[in-house]
Length: 140
Image 1 (tube, rainbow, N blue to C red):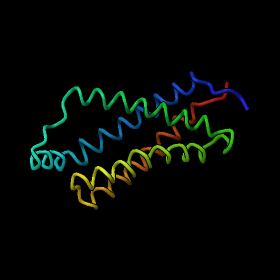
Image 2 (tube, rainbow, N blue to C red):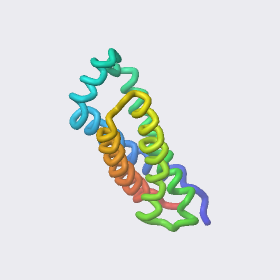
Image 3 (tube, one colour):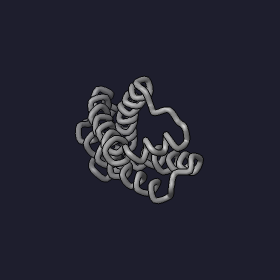
Image 4 (cartoon, rainbow, N blue to C red):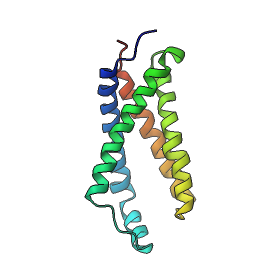
């Protein structure tokens, strides 16, 4: 069992983070943009500004790094490859989309069909990001 290769965690994590950021832009601007604007207006929320966008992008890159770090950590137990990458992606997806998304969605009155669509989107996004990031990871 080798040591974790942090340089490869960083490389794979940045790629995973890029995929997650692209997925989030597509989801929030292209797919849900009109509904989000209407929701913000209806509830008198201000639309996210530049500071929010910067924080969201940086945190999403960090999330990509965490996913690949998780992959590196569980790899000795589950073996290298796509299956283990999917497991790492599922851990992150559950915490971010499934758990937090459901709690926040219920708190803010998001319709169940929208929550399910977003959760499914996130599942695909996180699995693809984890696979891509893990593909770049090699043990030290």
